[in-house]
Length: 75
Image (tube, rainbow, N blue to C red; front, side):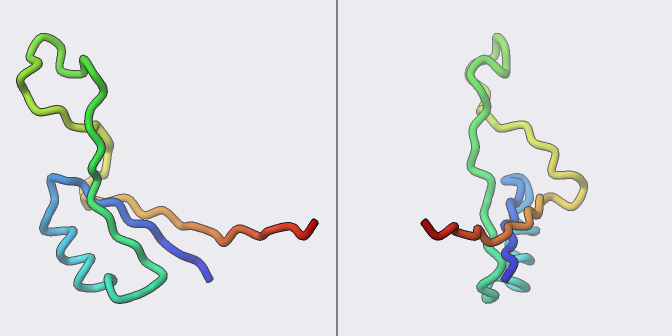
């Protein structure tokens, strides 16, 4: 069975809610909020600004990653 990992931009809580309502009950879909922090020094001199990861989630506000089952090899 194929599984999907959906990562939603932290700036799009509306998308997170919609996806959880539509797919949250399905075992093959895992929906997560992006919790990454920006790299040190990313904001230059303004160190007091909140650090955010820079990822292009596109206009839809999320990334979908298809996960394939791992096949274990017998010894």
